[in-house]
Image (cartoon, rainbow, N blue to C red; front, side, top):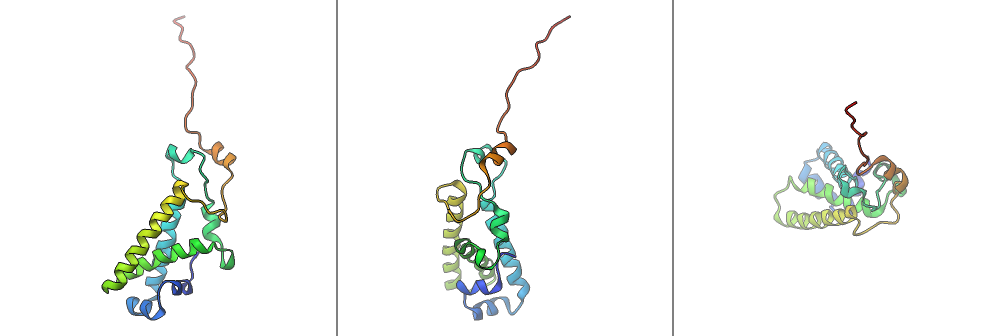
Length: 150
């Protein structure tokens, strides 16, 4: 798993996590896995033609399989913010909820900018553009063989 439970300490106090989850570690594991999958969905390209426009394509498997100090700190922080959102979703304390919602929205906006190429992280591994271009051909052209009645 990309995130570790101790990473949550950068966005929430341990006693809050304990109170919200009532000590159930499965809830935090599910929240961290959901956050990782959400980040993966923003960083991964899809099959639409817009994704073959020359923007950087990130090696998402390499990014999210990195461990310990090899992990990109900014991606860890944004992933933890999303995990916090999934944990706080259980809580009914308005102050925590509003703050978490604001930070979640900001994180999602930033991930969309990263995916669209409006911002770039030079420290993230990218896929080779030549290989990406060879795998995805946006269109093909040619003509049929000339029809002849004979």
